[in-house]
Length: 104
Ligand code: FES
Image (cartoon, rainbow, N blue to C red; front, side, top):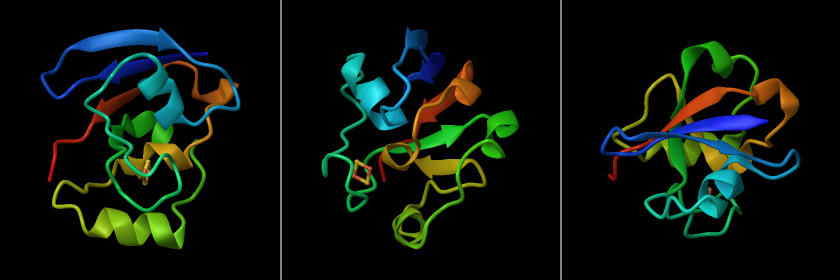
């Protein structure tokens, strides 16, 4: 499936990702180094914060308590905020657009 990634400067690029990876891994593996993902995906750093296009928000798993707490610590949080390491990339997400959140 494909994922559309929008960088902080607004540049948009379409990449292919493998089902089973996390959205964070798909972004990172495609060379977007502004998504720091410092904790490597164990839901403790919040540097993998992205804003998901509204039409895909309902297709995502619910926000877990740890993810919610971490997102709450971000000034950039909005209704489309997710931690990309907590989103498994699936066929249902084909064509999803995610914007890398600004740094807090
Ligand atoms: Fe650290 Fe997602 S990579 S919370």
